[in-house]
Every structure is written in C-alpha cells, then in structure tokens.
Amino acid sequence: MVVTAALGAAVWGVAVDGGFATEAVAAGNPGGGEVVAKGEQAAMSDGLSEPTRELLRSSDYIYTATRRKNGDRSSIAPVWFYYVGGDKLFFTTSPGSWKAKRLAAGSPLYVWVGEKDGPYLIGDAHEVTDAELIDRMGAAYSEKYWIAWMGFFRPRSDRVGSGKTVAYMVELKNP
Image 1 (tube, rainbow, N blue to C red):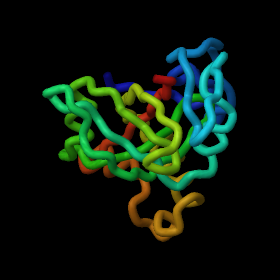
Image 2 (cartoon, rainbow, N blue to C red):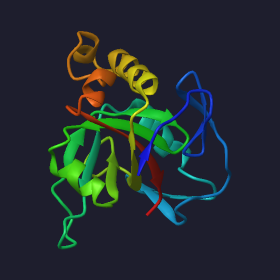
Image 3 (tube, helix red, strand yellow):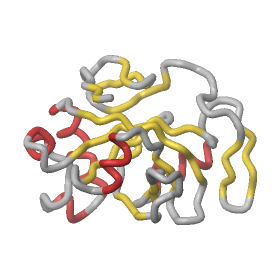
C-alpha cells in the first residue's frame, strides 16, 4: 500500500506536527506480547517499552530482515533510519533491493534495535511518496549522520519521485 501523508494530519496513528511525530493518536498495544530488551523482559501494556523507545532514539542503526518467498527469513542487514516517535520509524532503500521487493510483496519487516541481538520488533512498512515529508526526513538524517549532512545517502524527494529510492514509514509492533 502506498501512503501519502499530509503534514499536520494523522499519519499511521501518529499525530504529525511539521512532519515529525508528536504523539500517538490511538491507544492500545498493536502487537501484544512482550519485547525482550537485551537481558531483561519488559512487560508491554501500551506499545513499545520506554527502554526500547530510548534505544530507537539513541541508535544509529536498526538491523532488518524480510521474509523470503519460501517463508525463510533473509539475511540481517544494518540500515540507517530515523525514529519518528511513538511506534514509527522511517528509512529508505533501493527499489531494486530484495528488501524493497519483499516489502512490496507483503513481507513484514523484522527489526532488531541498535544491534543484531537488540530488542526484536516486527514492522509493517508503508511506502511514502509525500515530497515534503521525505525532505523533512532527509533533514533529520542530516542531523543524525555526518555524511548525510554533507549531502550523501540522505532521503531526497527528487530521488523518490524519479524511482531511484523507495521511502518507507514503518509501524512497529511487538512480536
């Protein structure tokens, strides 16, 4: 499903102010269960645990995998991302990548936060085409990653619009 977001509107259950999430709109735990946070279990009553959210705020990478056609999990790969807030994150990839092809076919996004053995989550990735939102995420990447500040590897609406990059907003859930 391709989702185009209007800034200042509710996007994937997150209230957006100027392109950045400010608060969850709907209450409730979308995935149920628990998140295991590196050596301890955190009971979940409403979305992601605070330690997991803090790790999403402070980590440079998420580690991701997708489900192959035969049902097996793909290799785990590090990915740059921006944690929007609530249970949402943003990332981009090449449209020819296996990740993009599998997400287009309906694969969930398997996510480990911070390290390959970090907290494990499952994501529902939605393609983003809204140019203003993509450019705001590019600005956020520039603040987070020094090489993006120099203009490299940051989300840009012109690249998404021309089909050179695919942008995703991911709704994270507990497994």
